[in-house]
Image 1 (cartoon, helix red, strand yellow):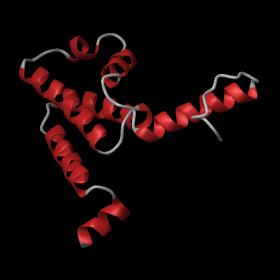
Image 2 (cartoon, helix red, strand yellow):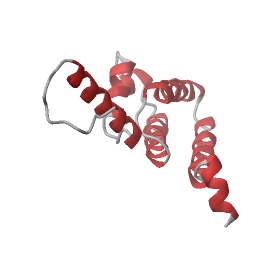
Image 3 (cartoon, helix red, strand yellow):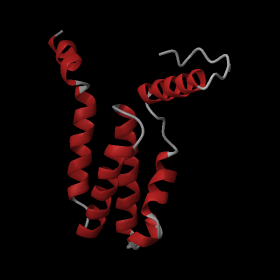
Length: 127
């Protein structure tokens, strides 16, 4: 009973546990791979998709990629290419966006359509 109440206030304890495990695994990477993962993680925190379990899965998959690459001595540039932003955008496109972002995106599109006098029949974006 108390766990349910605590999770309503703080969020999923399982997601927090997964994130702590992810961070512990990240610290085990060689320094250059760890720096790359941390930089990608920072970018994803601001511009990534998903939340909760979706985000945890995304970070774990990213870490799996870098752990395997470190084990194979794959150079970081061979992983991310010349454009790290393009790499992370392609990577993140494989994951859901989180329901709140989808709702807000549709709300914005609908509001602009209505403001521009366009009749699209899209009532989803009602403000």
